[in-house]
Length: 122
Image 1 (cartoon, rainbow, N blue to C red):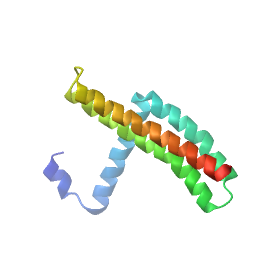
Image 2 (image 1 turned 60 degrees about the vertical axis):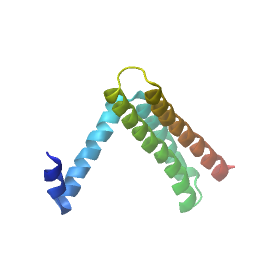
Image 3 (image 1 turned 90 degrees about the vertical axis):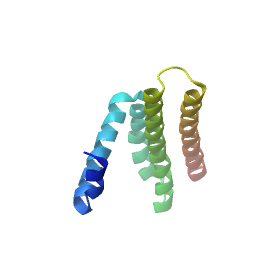
Image 4 (image 1 turned 45 degrees about the vertical axis):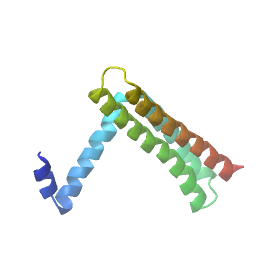
């Protein structure tokens, strides 16, 4: 599909196509990224735990949201890494910087989740 054809889609057709692209992105993350699979396992354990341990809707939302943020950041990090690898397969300082910054973002999302869980549960 060309850019012009994509921009011509409106309404439910565009939404339906976007859902398909999102499904494909989740599938690519699951298939190609071990860290994403590990974090999905973490989510599978912690989200039910959050529903049990949170004493109200706000606490549950904070606990669950902090875990979902990890998955979001991991997908974005993986996307950056894929583009960097495609654009520059040889070692380059800017490629390293981009990958390291993506990794740092994942680390910060993990630290954020730990802090949220500690604040809510302690």
